[in-house]
Length: 346
Length: 268
Image (cartoon, rainbow over all chains, first blue to last red; front, side):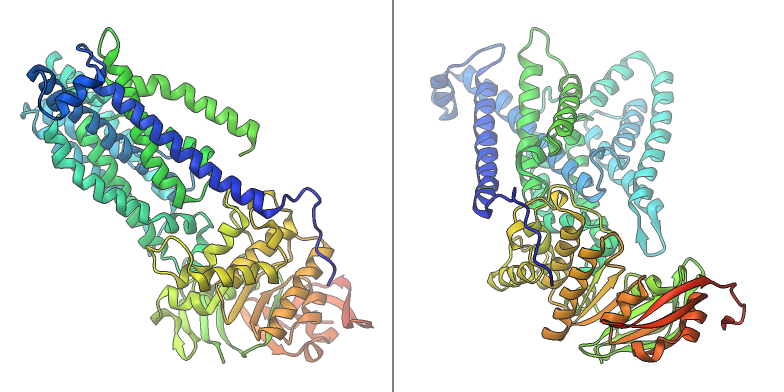
């Protein structure tokens, strides 16, 4: 046996170890401080600015009753909705990017947006009440993903390529039908449907948060527990199988959790793009690619990004749908991340 | 015997690539599968490790058909190192090797227990990459990468290790280094090893037995000395060879390629 070639540039193990821990500490601090700041700003800023003292008083229900209403019925549920939806989109995107071993995967890749969008346009088109929109969106998303999975299934395996292709095929097919329906429907209905298709948190209240929130919380816990499965899948099909992973079961479970998260997010806020695509990329830059870190941090970062975007959408002279803000801000950020990735080689 | 193939057949789609293979691997032996391209070596290895489902016959592991055992039960006894690895971008060597403990951990458990950490450290020491533990796997050279993946398989703590052409992408130095390492594991840890190897001479040097494959069937099994005749090698690889006595034992010297014969018995 010849001696091991020891590269002179090898850093001592201890410093590298510390860097990993430091990165985790840095990421945690960054996200928590960011979340605190955004939540504080979201509660204080708006058409009626409140001071922190007024916020505390309103929280304890002993201040100005108008402030109480603004805080408890308008700003707090909306901030919570933004946090919950953002967390769901961030985690869903991270799960899918990990499972599909593809950085282009977003929560909407498996046909969720197209399925939800089509059902919503149908619901609005046949003149059903708006309260059916969230449930319809949720069902449309879940059913479409189910069809994509059935299409991708071949014998006893589910291949990544077939999942991605199936998602693209169903998305364009349902997208086409949706466009056709929109073209044929009267003006008022287009407006109502478009508002939802772009994605907005305007007017979201306790109802949405309390109905969908607990489900998202449960799915988020389940999703984070799948971290090791995602890590195993990143080793390739043969090695993962050799390590005792059932590819079909893992891909079905991870896909199911990711779909439930994204469908629930969509049922609250409509089709908010880019959050689920970009957040996992940013998180991987912060903490590396171990999904035991990527998944929980993507949850936090998703909540941060969407609540920040909603703040921007809300405080301007004209309120914008938050989906427009994420798209306008998301694309340049994505390009920036790609550029850094190439430059840093990380 | 830990692994046994009985009338094993299998392949991709409807066409079986491997047919009617009967082969048993003894405890603590090193068996090499040799054969020309497309002779079914890798397919047989994938069948033995349950990556591929047999189209006929069975693989018996510890007295039980592997189709009736759970994937994790098999993964605790048998490890496979595929020919080409997907490099998990950004994972450190330690994180990668830790994944080898997966079959021994409950699925929801995030971190290794004391025993698991000890096994990972042992695997890193065996493969002599302890000093790279916190480096990203993508930063390693080819030889170091292959040792990192070997460490992952060792952390699995298997009784049988299957390796599909582990030396293919390595230069001579790393080829010998890796095979020496496997040799020590085989002798000192009583680890049973099955390798698919392209290089007949390396297989002859390190294996206890050779299993020669031709057109999806087992042509013959025996010790290197039994199999290393110009007739046998000529028939299996369709080459003309001379056997030389060298300081490392008998080795083949390939002379020329010969026209294939249809009856499986090439003219020499």
